[in-house]
Amino acid sequence: MCGIAGKLTLRRGETVSQALLENMCNTIAHRGPDDAGYYTNGCIGLGHRRLSIIDVDAGHQPISNEDGTVWVVFNGEIYNYIELRDSLIAKGHRFRTSTDTEVIVHLYEEQGDQFVTALRGMFAIALWDDRHKQLILARDRVGKKPLYYAHNPESGLVFGSEIKAILQDPEISRALEVQALDAYLSLLYVPHTLSMFKGIKKLPPAHILICSQDKVVIKEYWDLIFQVQGERTLNDYLEELEQVFNEAVKVRLRSDVPLGAFLSGGIDSSYVVRSMSKQLSRPVVTCAVGFAEKAHNELPFARRVAQRLGCTHYEHVISPNIRDVIPKLVRFFDEPFADSSAVPTYYVSQMARQHVTVALSGDGGDELFAGYSRHALQRLEAKVRRLVTPPGARLLKQVGQYLPNMRGKNTLKKLAMTPDRSYAFKHCGFLFNEEAKEKLYDDGLHAACHDFDVMSPFQIYYERCLTDDPLDKALYVDIKTYLPDDILVKVDRMSMAHALEVRAPLLDHKVLEFSATIPSALKLRGRTTKSLLKEALAGDIPEDILTRKKHGFTMPLAEWLRKDLREIVEDCLFSPRAVQRGLFQTPTVTKLWNDHLSKQIDYSAHIWLLMMFELWHREYLDNHVQY
Image 1 (tube, helix red, strand yellow):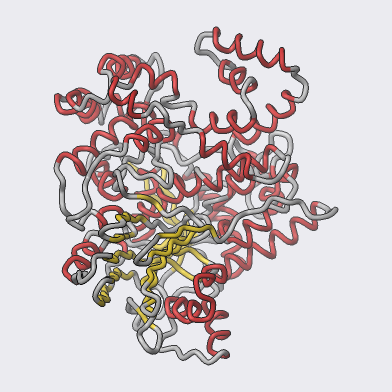
Image 2 (cartoon, helix red, strand yellow):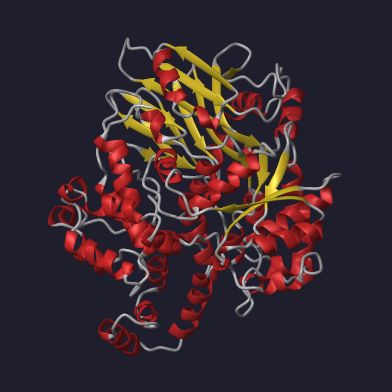
């Protein structure tokens, strides 16, 4: 696991300096503390920071082909590199190392920009083709590895694994992207292709970017197709799932450094560790974190799973003193990021790094196998809509508008929406929705965001999924939005903060493609979420863990904000510089805070959202800090 950065200048006669590359890579040294490398050749410069996992002694990057006409820097892991390497050697290619990086170089020589379709893994790649004078950026299918870029047709293209690397280029300005702010306030995160910096974008998952002297082309190279294939029994699906998944775990056990797993005591991580325990000749090293508060502590469940599977298990109880962690979150994410589960993810990564360099995780189980409550709601709404006439739908909408804030109000509102809009609302409608923004935004921010619709991308993906099944459509939306922009961002930044590589076998593209052939009724059976995974685990982990209610990676945020973090919150919300920004209505913010303090309403997510934005603004826009 590593970090990459670089620049292609389009100004004739201008060269890229190694000093710039070094500055860029120094900002992401935490991603790769073991080594650094650079390639400069006139208009192009590539930089790399390395965390050594495969071929520890000989894996220095950048790496080239035999005649130096193709150069690559790469962040990630290619799990099928051994098979690809053998195939390329049979075709006459000569290798100097045993790394997966060198495979990319020769694969490009064989297949051109289609090389990405042969790769199985997680990756962000920058490849320079000196013959054709073009830079190719590529990102893995689901977006496990990040890749940001800033393109100016007059001056060139700058890229990096993290935004802080791009900001080292003095030509990159720092200005707030108000559409990104509008999206963030509804979602907790900034969705692709936006970033919170005007002019800096995220390359979408499963896309490549090709930049030459005269143009930039961005194209998609993979998509997930939902299509149930033929008549099959439950046992047929279970057997194939076990086969495909165990093979995905097997290739992720390739490592020249210590390897273990995250274990929460939930279904997904238990499924991963169960497979590891069957394939390894030693006990699996597992790591778990929890809180002293019982409602937010899964440690007893993780401990029982570890004992059942014979793991070497480590635990850590997180203390409420997180004042020192919050500034680190701001710096590591580069953008405001308000999913508070980043805090326990930071701690479990920190603890795991004390024991291993690579950890497998259960990320993706909810998105592939219907683990969220919104999945059941979307399916239920589809059934109700089939029974409701158009006049009935209009009546539901009217009733919903006049109801006070109460349980069921949003349900009526969603039933009156089209299915695509309803599912978008499930992502965008529970924080600062359109009504809340009317009260929160100052006039200038209102005007700037007037034509921006945060729900639109969710609706587009919902309609793009070529199936009539509302649950599969919902899963497709999650895989294209929430998964890469929230879950995988959180895991990447928090693990890389500690130079820990995290691998997610449930997100192997072969597992994804198989999951899209499984009937949705086997993923969500009645109210039983992730039914197929639970069937697969039956008998291997305690029954009550299989049947217990989904917990999630939560922390006691509401009480922390009222007590331990109160001083920080009030400074962020009401200090003169926060108020003078002229973005938010102070009376609205004051009411939110007072209602939360008095425990009338739990506004912890809203307050954390505003606090993280203010801290980010101070760090990246007010101070213009150079790292």
